[in-house]
Image (cartoon, rainbow, N blue to C red; front, side):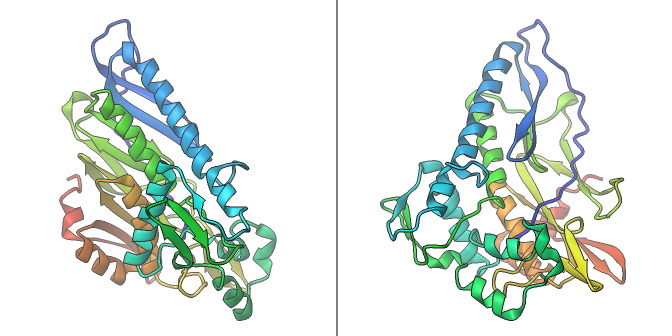
Length: 337
């Protein structure tokens, strides 16, 4: 899987809390999941504090369940389990696991939550490995303990049994999207219909921003430079967007480039020219996971998959050293003119 890199430009004028109970656009910001989050919503000053507290509590709960950086998280309890028992998950984690399994099957293994050991061995979790490229034997050994299809899902009991005790799960390519959806649900439960939620570049919006204009999100032009430039602006109306790319996360050994995007089906970094892909979907959890999977599949297979599953897709690829952009008809309908 891959680290998602996305640049978003909100184009909003923030109105902070005032003494009035009149609904106005206010902003909540903070840190979560090793990144930042922001929520912009049309809300009264009277309600903003309670909503902020609910958001923080939800994010803390998701981290406690799904983070591999929290030692006693639910996911780490499963990962540390060595016995052949069926580990029962909470409703929230189970929902994410079921969608992960669905997308693994839909993409024929391009999205795989058990890929962590390969990512580490290729040097994207442990930098000391980067000077020693794994050989075919090492890759095959790691592939033997990787594969969502090696996990036995018991839907009735909401539990999973490992077929191999050393297997582990990492939800980093889907948990942020799930959290975005959960924060949006909190807003809607409080009768807030105009909002934008963002966590680490994954974005969901509903209704309109201030001045009753559409929310606009800018997809970044891939570049290794510090300065960021816009590739395309998107009108985000009652949907969400996630972007996956590896153009800032790779290394070179003996002049050969190794992408952070690992293909779970063969254990090697991808070699295609796709550098960035953005996916629109009503659920940010699905957009997040689909963007990761389609970045593995490459441009041609990504568009074929998008047509089959009614996804709006925007891609940036390298053609003769220059970026080439493309999109399907569903995505074109959202492009800001």
